[in-house]
Image 1 (tube, rainbow, N blue to C red):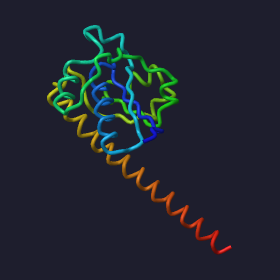
Image 2 (tube, rainbow, N blue to C red; image 1 turned 180 degrees about the horizontal axis):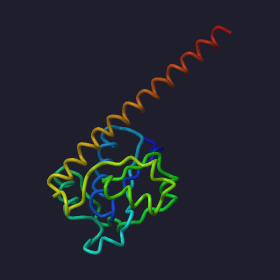
Image 3 (tube, helix red, strand yellow; image 1 turned 30 degrees about the horizontal axis):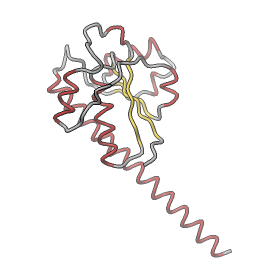
Image 4 (cartoon, one colour; image 1 turned 45 degrees about the vertical axis):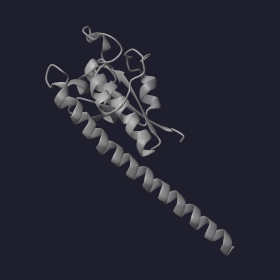
Length: 170
């Protein structure tokens, strides 16, 4: 399957919430055979001074419980750039209260084009509540993307069929 649409998940440090969302989305998108792929970035990775390693152990553990294995050579957290916004078809920031102010400060021209969820960081919401919440929202997201993809595919088939019928008439 050709991947031609990109979704970008944003959190503060690109270590915990956005990385979980990226991996869970990609596993589910592959399973559902939709042509979307996720990536993730951080809005303020410099604030993640306590982040050790490439990805949060909470994210790794919960992904493992979902039978999703993280590669041993997992990349380190990355900061979002303007190019990331340009490349993405859809951008989701994981916590409106935390991330909208960062967007307005650092990328004001993109702030209103971002979809904001409400999944606070560890100091507010423990992983046993936050990660299932992200999982549920990704299920809903995949369903909506599948519906749009299916509708567009049906519309394309109908258009092709109508065009063929018109050719036969002429």
